[in-house]
Image (cartoon, rainbow over all chains, first blue to last red):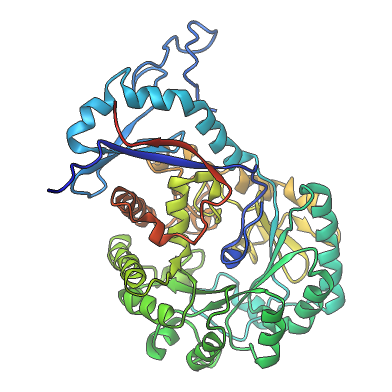
Length: 34
Length: 476
């Protein structure tokens, strides 16, 4: 029998380090450091 | 920042509401959106960029005052608002789009750099480029936390026309910056590829189709001859190079082919591509602008295809701009691109340097003199960052734009881009070009989450360095 759908789905992840600016797409495949 | 649920009553100048109910008084907005899913609807608190997907039969329960969703959100809302505030106003520049030359050997129909610049513009000498990188290094040494490596992306026009200068700069500063080169791929000979790949330099190639006839409609030399075979040869040489990506600019000319284009890119083992709707900053681009609702149909089919390819082969082709929208939902502060947030990243996360050293908030503005914030060599970076042209861009907020101010997904979109809003729609307080495409991408992203498929669209390790701030699966 198919499982009933979850009543709610909500999640959010937060970066541990404070952002200082973010990678440009061209560097997305490289290591991401903040 | 938005008034929070502090429970303070009667504070001077503030509404007395304690914010106990969704959608009234000081309570948070919780806007329902139909995501086109069989079992779930979206509920979004736009200011906090908080989203939930609620089973349709549980909607009333979810919106009940004092219910589980209200309680769970109330405990965290202040933190979420602060997170968005940091993302939108607390970052400082750490990346530079660097145009070492104004010139280009191609004449693409949608280019945002004026033709006169691309034909007759300046090219930096190695000495000038090294001096410029030295100034940038000194700036970032002062402003960025120790251990943070700023990024330089040689951009265009065609940066490989200034190869000698670019390579001299990379060689001199390879320990100080992370470098990338966004190129049309026509000048990547064996020696250039060996130089760039041996140093781990990011390489982005521009290619608008999987077949010559379509690719050449928008990208060709000045004499209209094709560069397709040359670019595909470069792409084949970059096969399996981990810092390689492809940019496909999507127009009316190629939108119907997005699914075979995705197949083609995947077959050539590109790990990342961008399917960028054409930036409508100049008339040539606006002439081939696709209609949102038509583009959305093909765009989402292409995303479906990347999922199928991953299921079939175990190898991902990440569509970076969609991945960014998806990450803006599941982990807002982990997003990589800064176009899809307001203010956008221009002038606050990155800025652009032209071949004459002029500073612009973003390379989209190179060629629009009124957005010149100063000159790297003569005025310095701080002066430009604080200049009126830069402030115009960094002050652009979705809350001031209609219909964005009342849009549930405004922090997953950001109404990009200011250059487009200015050039095409008449002002910074206007929306960008592709509102409905963003709506559809967000709805698609939420559907992938509802179905537990979102990981397949994201780069591996996307959540490294993150913690889980909330994870709900029940309304109890």
